[in-house]
Image (cartoon, rainbow, N blue to C red; front, side, top):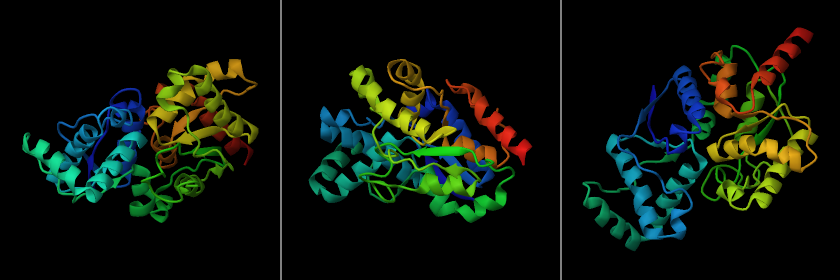
Length: 294
């Protein structure tokens, strides 16, 4: 069984708890063991870097140093955490002066950053380590041609992620492998607004509208995502967005782990479908309807 150090970040212990729990359920079936890092800290996300860049690198490097103590590569499901950890690795590899300063600070708490682990996103592990062929062999019930728009957001594929930075396709491959229909979704890497959607509401709603409108125009049954903040914005702001713009559908937003888990035969209750703001029942109903027509 492959083992990883698990870095949840703040969101997966709060608003994205259903992401964390569905991830653990899916990885158990796929024989991947996750061991949560002890005493992990907030990665600082993207905001801390505008306040004190070096301290921000130190904050993130502490998590990497903790992972190094386990001897395991680190998995970070949150796109902001994933981006921050990868960004820190790149900076400390390329800037020896900053690395020395960060390590002097880490020494005060008995840690040392040695750059000897890799940072992985769970989707990356699904595609590159587990492989789609193994997943196909474990499928117990496909998605019955459910139309899914794959939404990656800003930070998974660029600038430190995997695949084509402008047109990633790992979720596309996964949707196809588990029996769904991949919707041609040209805004798959557009920004959801992030935190700015709550500071500059009008601009944020416009960004959400673009994402929802493209999915609605293409008759998607749901938007699949891998980022807690993208998921939050698309769910929480959707009702307000429908009032402000000409949108008609209430579109479910689902984590890739939830639909993957469903195809692996995991009960929707264990995948915490009930914790979604926009009910995912319509996904299940649509699947049942397609089955009955076949």
